[in-house]
Image (cartoon, rainbow, N blue to C red; front, side):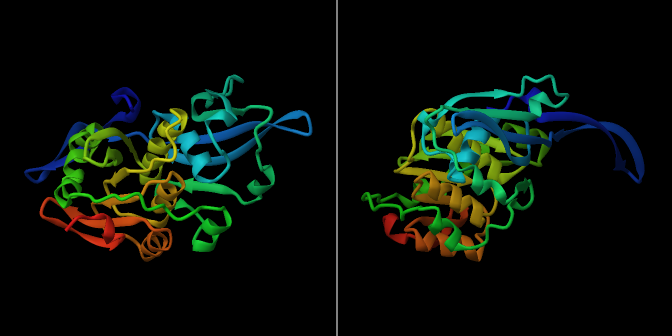
Length: 282
């Protein structure tokens, strides 16, 4: 998980108190760029290609890189990866560059990178705005596995997630994603200035542990549920997403098209079900 030393920065501010500005210090969430590079074999020779730049909160960077590459269909399984490391070429931003080295036999479609994968903490994966893009990648609907979830467990997930948001407690300006089992027990939490990055870190952790797909897993997110969050959950095989905020129309369409369950405005006293109500016992 993100350590406080990496995720926090102290800044000088002025605070209006009793009608006058008073100098003081505050704590803010760190936001820095991360470049993801992939080293792969093509025609018997090793090549390196820059894949993406994302604005993220430092920490869990290897999970972020792995989760992003898997969610984009650029990695097929843990066996594809030989090593993940920070850039060791002496570049000034070496800890803002992650190199994913693939095994010689791993397939890597470098031609698919002709589209620029540029992300920011506000927009997610830009330019991906259609269900067809997901279908072309070969994503299959989530299979029915007989999940019948207690509504009380689902309504309690945001509170459990909030209790683990250490960086949010300090800064008030960071998102979180949490992985839970079907009984509502917490498995892992990741925080980041980008909500999609937090999900990538959750997926990347499971990817590196050889735990994908994540069937019978519940994903809770601290904000709204956008298309990219549902797409990342779908790629990881997650059947149900719980959001504190509202979904977008495309998120609802994607969940319904691929047999996912999607909850929004989730509070202790209830929630809205936008897709997949059959997984909720009632």
